[in-house]
Image (cartoon, rainbow, N blue to C red; front, side, top):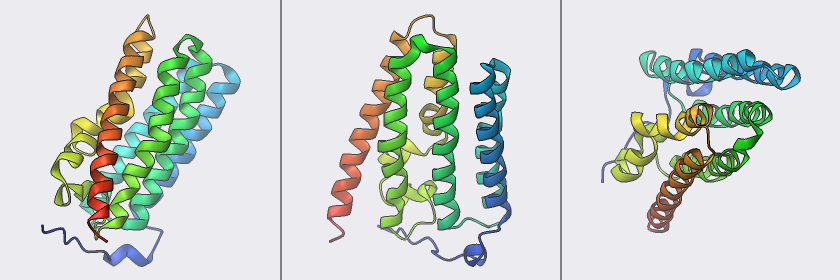
Length: 196
């Protein structure tokens, strides 16, 4: 299996790459807006926080590839920043929609624990980021880092929480995503065991 992706890029030795500055800016902006949304009990601030988070998260990856500034450090920074944004945005969302505690709790545990470990698993192979995991396992890549999977992983449950009158449907979706993460972790654990 050919998984050779350069470990060191031109920008690898500098943390002050353009995509990392975008990640930092969108994280500070989204976290500040989410905290303000919590304090003010404000839907507009929460929507602003999610917009900054999701647009910035898309932009930093596009810019990293466009400028050829993808780095392993940048990938880890992006993964950690996603958790900072998600945790505070979800806290604000839970405060504004307390009836959605079950789906949001399922999503939070899945994203903060399972998805974090899964996203960081690329570090076990010579890959620059999870975006290249198809070279290790196309199925795990398709389930987690393809464009549809990324949308499903980070926004589908949140959007369903916003529009659903009942917590049942978002909870079912969050549970389904959790099962996909568990299946992915099992596959990755088997692949990692074969590295020994």
